Image 1 (cartoon, helix red, strand yellow):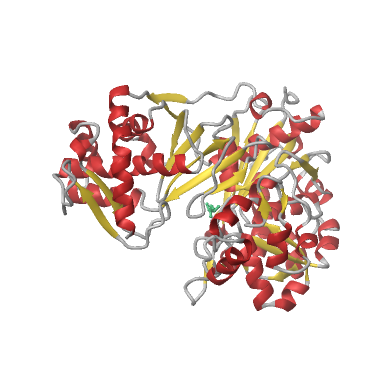
Image 2 (cartoon, rainbow, N blue to C red):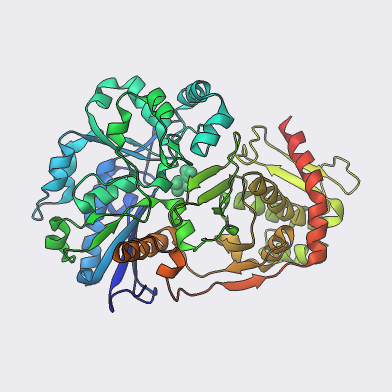
Length: 532
Ligand code: XUL
């Protein structure tokens, strides 16, 4: 579907630390990027990394008014750059997942009647029933998680229903906590939004619906029925369905920009707003992981693996299944390994003299399969698989537990181990790659990319674009607009004709792949033993 000539699609990403914008043109080229940092550009809110860590060590919140102020600030910076707001055909958006915004009864009126002569933050100051929004870094709801799993028949039952076992950061458990500990604030709440749907609400001037993909990060949505689960809602808090509103497919147009933005910044009055979604779903869109088997591995502080799946297998112990943000009948699957780049850096320092060159040379010098030497580093309690006890576990080629390998073997083992683990646990939850897009810091490391390709037995692609969530939001703006213009659902790739292809960085060597396949059983055993 061709976009209007000269038209732009704007993606906004309200992440933990900043609000970012990316605009793409009708050829899907990135033509503009900007951002507003919460800590440094909105210092009055006193956040660190965009959040407030509470003294109890487990509660983490952010001031929702900061997200409001950031929108005006970013748009003002864009106006300073003479950004052509009038050309924006549609806006899409991304928000950090799981965070909630609690709105009082007066909020809807305020949203509907914003005055372009006054800052947004001044007008929205009094609309929050909870002025410290719980965000994804919060881990204070262990009690509520246990209760949910007890009520719904166990962790696996919660995962089968909602896509994930009960997680402390997931919004339903945060809602249960607020209802239990602050019933009056709960009673005063007219609408509970996610960060994503809240940002869309500001733009449309009304409550914008939660989309099905971000809605899957709440432990409240039936991922197969694609509606709120009555059992989960009833257990969580009274009158919750009315406070959440009905969820919508992620490609839905949820309104047009309200006059505030047209009057103040010069947006086109018919500029469509497409449902905002979570940052991970938007990254899936930004990386165009559309077909089942399209998978990305992001190597960063945490390593994440996510992709599209038509047949996911939710796990009662690890990983997440969300409704897909780009293909309403499909799913997005995601696993997170906590011991990522910090662990690799530790091994680099201990076994490669602190040099990435030596680290890579060690990989190049050792054979695929590392002569049977395998390791599992749990420097921090691991999420996938869940391992609470820290330590480094090693088996040599004769299955003996050893305390150290030769330096080069040590390097190869940490790299191979992380990909073997991702292959095992990805497959366990329904993620079977046919190709892998490598992103994040370590993806520029060709030795690691080669190991990745051989472990999974599929080609590895690389792309240039950073900020995949904001880019995905811009792409989703284009997708939602195309579906609305056609009056029917249009496949994501048809709505993005001519998007630049990714570059093939490695193809698997069948012999090396066979070596890795034969190692899976031993690696699973190592993980099991680390768990006892
Ligand atoms: C995902 C998660 C984080 C947040 C913030 O489950 O908690 O990735 O979305 O980025």
